[in-house]
Length: 373
Image (cartoon, rainbow, N blue to C red):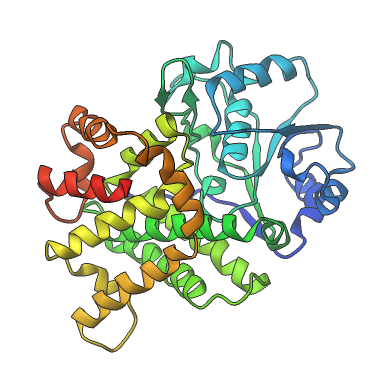
């Protein structure tokens, strides 16, 4: 059994102000910074970055593509003095920085490195500064990209591309819209639940998944304000869930979320807000009860299950407007159920094998119908 963590994390409030100092510790001097465009006029961000020469403010309408990577490579490949990449933003922004770090040291178009490329040159060092609490991309090497031309979503994944440093700054997270924080935290929460109950979970991954669940579940269920302490719990909850997932597996809705992202432009984090919940309900309906192990209450297993699903429903309801808007494209597609069911068929229902119990094709059809409505 192997459990792998490769993370170097610096965290405190206002930590971004020490970016120059952290670079010095890593013997890095001249970064190319990929920053989400929404922070272009943010005083705190611009003050933190004012000493740096190369900053690209990235605007993404949807998730990052191989085509965007090729554009950025062409734009910046002539900068010979760049010695690292810094990604400041959500998962899409940091993943873009990851992909570019690899491309600037390797020849050819980005699509050449789709999947798990081998025999590549070492990428430029990458520093990740997340502005959401869902992706966990700041502590893993994976980077997700979509091919607009081929309608394929895989990514560029190399163990050489682990971030050399992750900087957690609660002040940045507090600048995000409240609904985005909630959406992101819910995505991390359901990822922790899926990983805890996955058929590939181990005693070690369960420790991280349960700790993640406790931090996220309690924070969201009892949230009053997004203060420093609450944000810090949400940040670490996200990271712990990713430590668990990267050493185990998620549940069956990963493929569904990818499909919704590519075909309906629904961000993966938002899709998690409603897809996984339908699987949880179906599993309980079919007799699965191990979700109760996540609840630290001295009550019966049945009451724990009821508390689990009712509390989760209450948490997800906080993001009801964004979920409702996302589902409009599904509701308007009369062939949605057929399309997504056929997509699962192409995988011979392999994703369902990660579900903690067996679900039949009819069970899956019901779950998909509920996801749509």
